[in-house]
Length: 483
Ligand code: NAD
Image 1: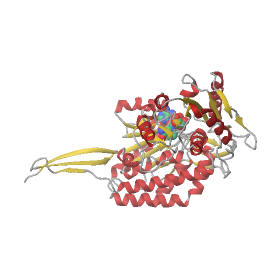
Image 2: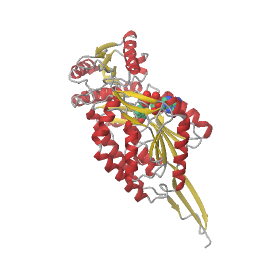
Image 3: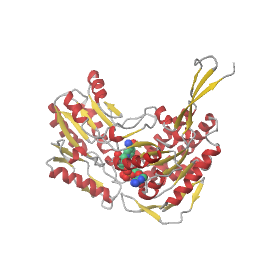
Image 4: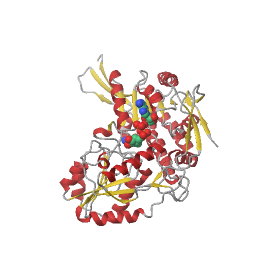
């Protein structure tokens, strides 16, 4: 059955006047869903609705304990619907169902954590400013938050924002990716059923240049929280400058996974494989550069190539799939283009390197997990975010050299390192210029741990207490008391 959705505004589906966007599954071409192609007028309506709901105080003035209760009720409804949401996510993105299920559960965990954080909203009182003086420092909700999210982790990237903004008392207008809008709309409906007041969550579907641009530049939006490419992030930051609009940016990456010869190499093999194939490599933190100590570089690469033989490419709903389809044909061409460039520039392809069609994959956009040896810093595949399952292997000799190669990128989202030497682990992680460092693990996370980038990977933090504070303004109130 083809799902047809309209915008979600003021607590109900609002039929769009314009066209619909077809979403065909990237794994088999089947028509999955139709979404409203929103316009600037739809964004105006959603922002006005969010503004009215926010200013009514129905949500922002609700005691935090009650807000937390509503958010937990929402989590309970989502928990009953994990399978349905996971199927939508897997089919629209093309990712394995096993992974999609995990992501829905992780989103619910983030929601419950944000609900608990609502209880923690507090300020400071300065009581020693003088006998007749009192200073109060309070945190207030920022207001109407515009949220723009990408297609690679549709529900997770939304739930790194929305529960935290709601916990702080804000209202939201969300623009999901036009390729993967299903779970945003389904979860908004469940929020309403759980008691989130009408107008606090609004979803406008459509393209980036129309709906995204209208939302990012809207004067009625107090803050814009964006997850996506660095190129669009830069445009959003430039546009925001005029109105001094608050902006939080979660952008791209070119992370390094550093393997020292003293590491537990069995675990490192698994971490490196997961790091570059998870979500078909369409992962902002993908460990797409493997820095490996020269003494083991050859044998470690050979083991990776061997291990890849048991990685299963497959259809999204196949429980046995490890890796699914890329998001669309244009992206498949782009990833294959990077592979071609890697070869032309002199890197040696030691695994994969082509489109995969065998075993019923011919209607989808599948690419073999690919490993390049002999990669040097002047090569395109070393520098650019490929956003596909492509690994570049770069040998190093010393700790200093490893750190210098890892930091030799304009990105700074994440890095990983593998060693059994605790001094090396702590010393190297301090020197890595990234918002996250994984030690003897890769792509691990916890709701309490803030997530975000250094350098051109963005600014602002999601998750953790910092993730809540992003959605608040700090106010100082000075009082003179008649004593
Ligand atoms: P993208 O930048 O093309 O699109 C992201 C979102 O922005 C989409 O909803 C899109 O419709 C919208 N958009 C496009 N043009 C716009 C414009 N002019 N104004 C406003 N909105 C616009 O990114 P993508 O291809 O969807 O996602 C892949 C990128 O996202 C990668 O670079 C990846 O690293 C990054 N990403 C980062 C994180 C993180 O947390 N740092 C997480 C996931 C993805």
